[in-house]
Each structure stands twice: as C-alpha cells, then as structure tokens.
View (tube, rainbow, N blue to C red):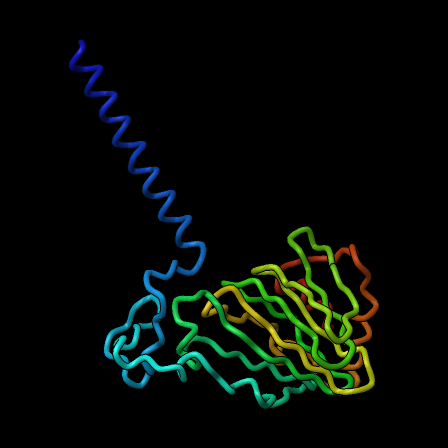
Length: 231
C-alpha cells in the first residue's frame, strides 16, 4: 500500500512538472525572446543560409557602430489611395534591432489622409506626432471605439492585436513616428479592394470615422463588421 501511494504521488508530481514546463514555455512564447548577449546584429537576409524563428546574428568580430544606426526613416514612403504612407523598419533592415524586441515606423499623411483600419498581431504600437493634427483611435474587444485628437508632441498607444486608424484632421501634411514592442510586429489590414474606392466613397468614409465618439459601439468587431463601416 505504501509503495502504491508513493508511486501515485510520484506520478502526480511528474504530471504537475510537465504542465508547469508547458505553461512556462507558452508564457515565454507570448513575447519576443530575451536577449542572451549584449548585441546580436542581423546577418543580411541575402547571406542567410539557415532559417529559424527570428534572424541569425552576425559574427561578433564583424559588428560595427553602423549596425546600430539607420536612415531608413529619413524620407516618407509611397502614398496609397488614402493619401497615407506607412514605412516600417524591422531587424531585417536595421541589424542592431535584432533580439531587442523592437521595431520602428514612420507614417506620413496628406492634408486629408487616412491610415486605414489595421492591426499588428505581434505588437503594441506607440505613435509620437511630429507634425500636424491627427485623430487616432482603436476598437477594443467589446466593440467600443476610443479615439483622441493629437497635436505635435502628443503620444497615443494602440494595444496589441486591436484594429486602429489615424485620420489627418488638420489642413497640412502630418507625420508620426511609431515604436513597436516586437522586432516583427506584422500588419493585417482591410484592403482597399473590399469596398468602393471612389473619391466620394473615401470622403464619406473619413466623415464616418470622424463622427465616431469615444465609447461608441461598433456593430461587429469581425472583419465583415468593420468592413460595414466602409460601405
């Protein structure tokens, strides 16, 4: 009897240990991996010979100060039909970001530009307004809209995985700088092909977004529901 009890206790201990290991492993997978050394600049993708979940490090002997500087955000990207450009810089373009759990971006908008509804599946985004007046907002999992007018120097946060948008609410071009807490935030967007993209329809869309107030319920948070805003 005693041996049977010991056997059962040992079995339960092993099961608990397996669940503990599995749970802690899942927790570690929720965010980018912790850095195991001071720096780990990325090997150029053109020179990559193995493929892993992330990017391999350069030979420490070949690391230079240039790996930790980028001019990728010096100029805006190409504008889309909404009059906005989104430019992302990840560890692939900026080697010094590798393993640090960070990436950066730049958003430029025409006088009536709009950053279309989108979300980042792997990162929270913080934007810092450097030019213009913006209306920024996001939709939470309770289908509520939270939005604020932003001026130069203001900061706004878009929580991870939530649909958000930015509308230029001023009379001049606007610019914002973004920081993401992942070196590969990803982007999922409602594409322009899902709705009528005539000038009149785009203007109606901007008016509808501007008319939403904080705490206002969106009918449906699913992709079809959000697409209804564009109809």
